[in-house]
Image 1 (tube, rainbow, N blue to C red):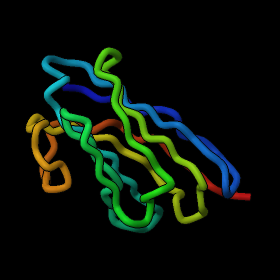
Image 2 (image 1 turned 30 degrees about the horizontal axis):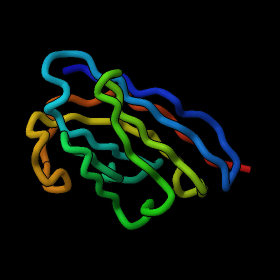
Image 3 (image 1 turned 90 degrees about the vertical axis):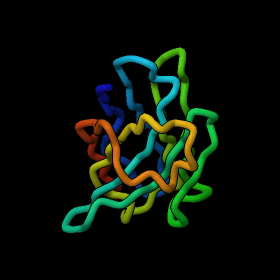
Length: 123
């Protein structure tokens, strides 16, 4: 599987962005997908995941503001970012894991990563 993330940009605090992660390869419906973020000078952090049954999970800092979804017909996973804060600034990465039916927060290793898309939240 190969992933390509897009949709980043500059947004004011309180604004919104929609990120996309387009997958290519075989049996994509069976994969679980996750979004990560790496803020400047910080470790990469897990944000959210969605498994093959569309069960979703979020880290506390984005719960209620971010929404992950998937459209298997388009081989695309989305992350809708609302209520953005300056601390949401960073490079956002999508990742895929072939064990799609799993409880996805427990997935530690990923088969593929997207190239990252930069989100900057600033006034």
